[in-house]
Amino acid sequence: MIERFKRSQILLAILSSNLDKKVEFSVDIKTLSSTERLQKALKKWAFFFFLMVISVPIPAAHLLLVPSFFCLAVYSFFSTLKKPYLILVGEIPCPNCQTKQKAPKVSFNWPLKVICPQCQLQIRVEPRFREQPSS
Image: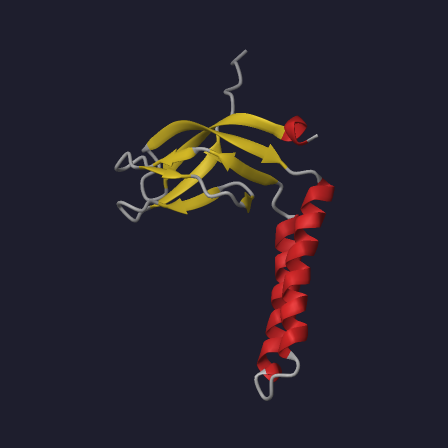
């Protein structure tokens, strides 16, 4: 079932400060089903809820920690539900300095934004759409 949603996709790395610099590359992306996203979201919510419960007996600090962990639990739950893609493996080249960096294995939504470790510029990663034939 996992392989059903896995596919290799050609993407564009676009330098955010200069939209003319683009590099095409390919990575393996998994499209998460709604149940997989819900499972990931519940795991994150449970983690922050656990931290919230543990911080209750801490004197004075619980006044700040409990509401903070509650807000983080709610935020992480809903933000995880909104991210339907997962990069499995691949390298992202920088359009400016051509340095390749390992793609982060995180859930995301388009556009994915990464920072080049060499030149410290922001790179916007977008799917490459096939051009429509003109009729």
